[in-house]
Amino acid sequence: MNHIIEVENLVKKFGQLVAVDSISFTVAQGEIFGFLGPNGAGKTTTMNILCTLAKPTSGRAIVDGFDVVRQQSKVRQSIGLVFQDRSLDERLSALQNMNFHAMVYHVPASIRSQRIEEGLRMMELWDKRHHEVRTYSGGMKRRLELARGLLHRPKVLFLDEPTLGLDPQTRTRIWEFILELRRREGTTIFLTTHYMDEADNADRIAVIDYGKLIVMDTPEKLKKIVGKDTITVKTDDDDRAIEEIRLRYQIEARHDADGLHLEVANGGEFLPAFIKGFGTKILSVSLRHPSLDDVFLKLTGREMREERAGNGLREAIHQRRMRH
Amino acid sequence: MNNLRGVYIIWYRDLVRFWHDKMRMVGSLAMPFLFLFVFSRGLSSSFGLFGGETDFTQFMFPGVIGMAVLVGSFMGGVSVVWDREFGFLKEVLVAPISRASVAVGKTLGAATIAMFQGGIILAFAPLVGVSFSPGTAVTLAFLMFLLAVSMGAFGVLLATRIRTMEAFQAVTQMLMFPMVFLSGMFFPPQGIPVWLGVLMKINPATYAIVPLRQVILGVSPDSAFGISLFGHTMTMWNNVAVLTVFGVAMIFLAVRSLSNQEQFSMAW
Image 1 (cartoon, rainbow over the protein chains, first blue to last red):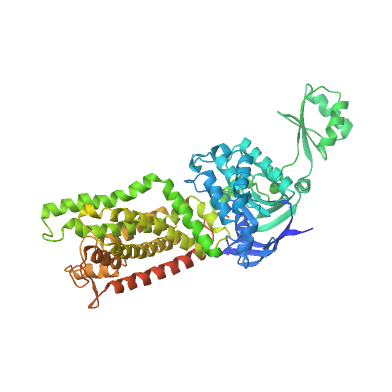
Image 2 (spheres, rainbow over the protein chains, first blue to last red; image 1 turned 180 degrees about the vertical axis):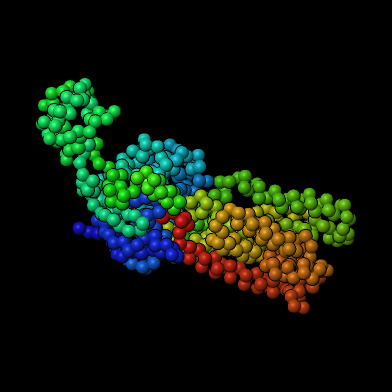
């Protein structure tokens, strides 16, 4: 397999603070690689180094065969970027923003306008191409940034929290675009996120915390670390149902206001037979796979959401201690 | 070659942006025109100053052109701060063009816009009662360009160091306005208190305003409208030399400063 990104013992220090602590990993060509971790874990710093926006304190990183320190220009030509925060010229139109990008990235004039049209149509922005970007909604701006990031057909597309602050519908749409893109162009996608459901789209995920790589695997395997699926059943006679489950499956179901919860290894396979052969009348059934939230909690003992800022973190830890 | 292309693209974007922004175009001319037709007219009538050949409006005219060029190019250069604030600078800094070409392109973009603004005011010469030959116009354009490039690069240099909007305010209030007022625009650098003279001689813009006035009004460097440094009367070419040295230094520093920029947010 070809490795399009190779990172070896990467370190980045800001004074005393070690933001990235000797990280090593590789990303295969065409892979969707997710970088997951709380705010301040070192995700964006690592990405900035890979994008040549920051210099590593030590270690080595290769993108598309080029060294990110010694061959900056080559790396930059090979990558596309969608930043966490906006990077559009809001005073220019979508078309002008695209044109600027095409010129900077040497997209030949002969195919420039066709490429730009294609990108804007794909992101459904063609009708508004002459509007100034500042009149766009957040989702439209993000889509424009995606279209722009793809304009020069990068080998690797870096997405830093690509759907941060967007509504669920827009998030879904943007993910459809990203997956479509990978299918069509075989683009490698390197993404950072702290949305767990978003990381599920990745082929492999690296979990990073306090600048260190904790674990790296497929979402499915990571979830296995946490363990079983949870099935929630509502019946018209819960006591009888608990008894029946105990007899048939030797599982002790947990009972609360939402119904009965039972943990099984493979809920998808378990359910059809369970429903078919169950004596008690079932009112509703739901299946929940362990999420990457659960994975993070299991690995670090902390929930991702608690990690806002230094203070917030200390408070969160404090509160947890109080609860215990 | 690649660098040249980069310079062109950055320059081009600034022009497109300026062309887009009609309000900025009009707004940028309001201040010089106020000084020229309201302030100086009012002042010369009420004091009856500068009787004889040169009236106050004519005296002010070269200064107002210089002011338009100085403010236009300096603000144009400092606009890198806005590009950072609105995120666009990231797109530029991660692009496969050298930082040097970004700094130079930005400087030239600011300078071109400033030249345009100064040129419009220059076109009002007949209204002020000033006339000059086409050859003089070329000399004027040359002086204006030197000032524009120097101040544009100075602006870019400062912008790479400015991190907050407060600092941006401070720079314009405490640097740009003093540079305008101490440039010889309102009063020539002769017959003034020593400390004021020293400040004016430190101000690089003085070496543009003084020769601009000499050329436009056709007065000699050793008149009351000249400037002397360490007892030496500065000729036209002396002034040009000072301005060039300053401009080249600013471009060098701006390129170096932008090249050393790493990341812009502390978000990890």
